[in-house]
Image 1 (tube, one colour):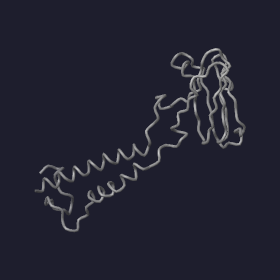
Image 2 (cartoon, helix red, strand yellow):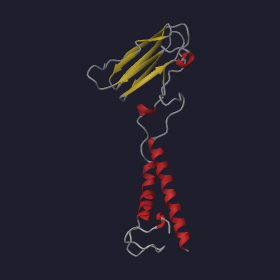
Image 3 (tube, rainbow, N blue to C red):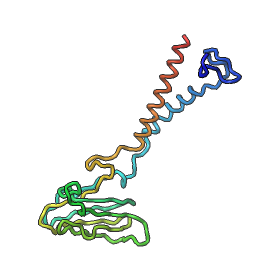
Image 4 (tube, rainbow, N blue to C red):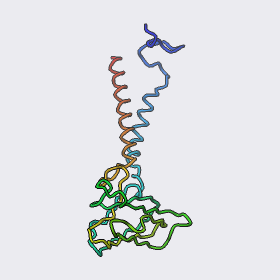
Length: 184
């Protein structure tokens, strides 16, 4: 026998499960299978984390308003004039917080000369921000997806956890079936 084939101290390797021996793998598998549907039912990330807002194209003189209902820290940019296209200063931030210095008044951000003014606002939840395009070019106010995909929402953490647990449960079931097959 090789060192890794030796039975644990006090146990004899018989190939069969002894009566009364704990069935840890079986219990874990059962628990995971019972929990799996609950994990898929987990709520997705909060709206502030997944909502990708976009004004659409704003012609000269046009405006667009968005209400921020939850605490968030959103960076925004102009899609036609993005940082990737060399407009590195054409971005802004909407910080929504219950902080004492956050404004409860609705805010207007003006677009002029390929910039947002003000470029950063601090507001309380429930406050609206209006973007007004005073520039001759068409612009947008588009939330930047910090995950790197501007037009795709992130997957729900509930799905990711459920998929991971599902893979683990599947591996445990396959291992158990293989053990049973070896015993025959």
